[in-house]
Image (cartoon, rainbow, N blue to C red; front, side):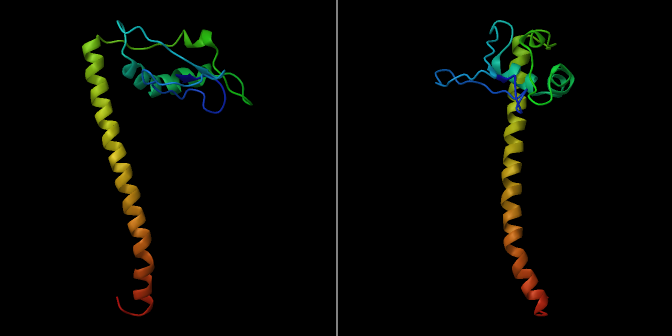
Length: 130
């Protein structure tokens, strides 16, 4: 799915097979040909700077309600390596994303611990115990 209108223009996500949902007017369902491109590869490519900054940005029309014309989407330039290479790339990018998610969680936990520790440190500092 790809948001083609509004503040989220260019955002996209995979639809899990069997998942029920309602498709809004500002969202498009893209159905890639599995003989040419795997869905995960298309998703990563749509989220890449190659598409987001170099294609979606310049093709987006309007300032009050930005939108992408369907005709503009058909002109996107995508890179299509062979399917085995696409699978390898998707696997690698999924691993990197999972690692980044783990780091983000660790960063959040560490920040919370530091926030909790700071009052105790300040208390000891003002009591002259440091």
